[in-house]
Length: 444
Image (tube, rainbow, N blue to C red; front, side):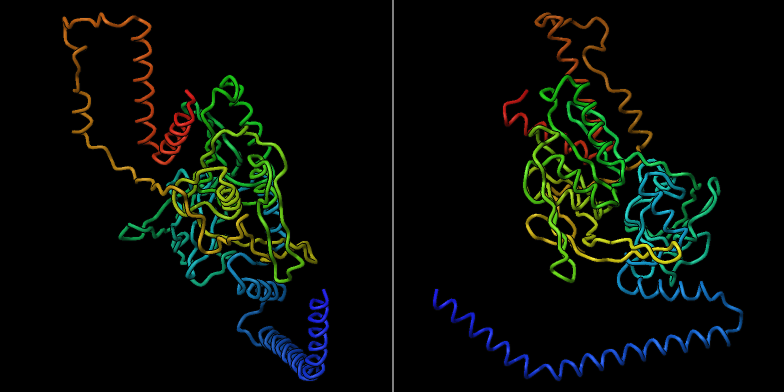
């Protein structure tokens, strides 16, 4: 105890000495820094006045100042920006789940607009836009050199109007055009269905509806299946989910965790950090979970995947996620505008940041591109015949009618599995994992 107290005293004394020695230089540095800031602000005012007085055309002073503010924010990172009053209102509408547009979440990379993910069932999704696409032109005009907000503004327009975007896609030799008809985007945050005794929860975004939709959809599917005992497990499909509200990511993670940390956030000041912990209660009642992710899974999706992975509550299947590990705070400003500012990074329960790295799946499964089926192959498949198709073939008298019925049902299930593999290989793979886990645990 004495040693501890002595060490503390020595440390305090040394601190006093150092403070006395460096206080004057530090004050001088701070004064110099403030002088430089005021000089830069004077420079800004000088440039603003010269533009207003000498630019070749008359300028809108308000727009000029907004552009300067937005330039200051966008120079920080791709996710900080100024929101005009209209943009701020649009963002509030979007978090409620209904807005106008194409239905894509975008970011900026190398000066071009990069698609984080298309949203299920939207015009962009139906037109064939894919996660990872680079948009280089909108209606023939280049977006190179524009801010992200300016590029997004070019893509906006009246519902029902047509827009043509030029896309560069990995694996394609040449850029190509995609025509999209703008529409009102009505998001269903979670779609629930049951496939082969597995409940599939397709989460498309994290807005105010996400957790209520997920809870209601899961309960409905369990009831239709005849109870949780009739369910193999749950697939949480977060592919092409661009994220959204942090609060909803926490609630969805908490839905399947009994205890422990879900996520922590850390800003520049350590005192501003937060930790969010799970509360007792598991909607899945301990049933195995598979989470599907891909390169279009970002932000809130990665928080959920990272939390369930670190707690070993779910097996993560698919491909590496997008890698957005920062948190933005929307701050209202004078005049009904707002500022979206990156204020912290988030960390998974194990303390890892996924910024620029993404969440790596436990099992890497690529989604193969669908190849066109040749007509000859289709015709040859149609001509396949079996013994039972031959006229006068013998009946199988070793099985009862009930046994034959069960065999035919098993065959039908196998055919459905094969069909699902062609339509969505990653999803079929996830279902197979849950079936394997149930077999291993002795569950029929």
